[in-house]
Length: 171
View 1: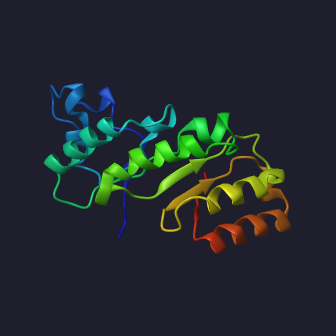
View 2: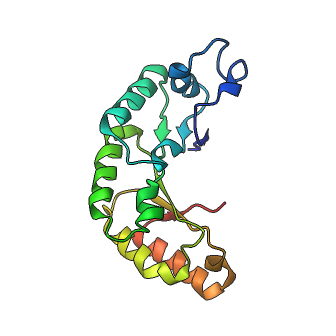
View 3: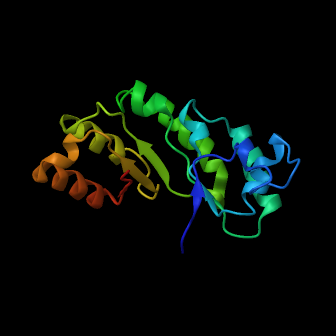
């Protein structure tokens, strides 16, 4: 299976192109799911998601598509950029409780790390990933170039991800 989608659905410039003319912003997601089968869901990156909001998004997808549409939410930046995966158990639990509300519509989640989260943080990353539910689908995006400059460091990263059953997102 292939899943194709964008980072967000709230694009006014898509009216008349992807969305029908006169589509209202509140109906963008309903129009989006008719064209794509997934969304990266950047919206939850900027704050911890709320369960009631997740339920609204899921209901909108359920009402407008018959296909296997998946929400692939980013981890909130509170976890990845502010806490830097340290002392983040409470916030991680809140994040997981909210996004698992997607149920069968929950796809893999993306843990995007900041540009200054370098290879010296490998033990922190590994400890954080180990504390997530084992069956929780996660793709990690490291943005610091030092992860890729040294073959040994790169190998350590990918071996650790493979051992834990986690994927990598590379941009």
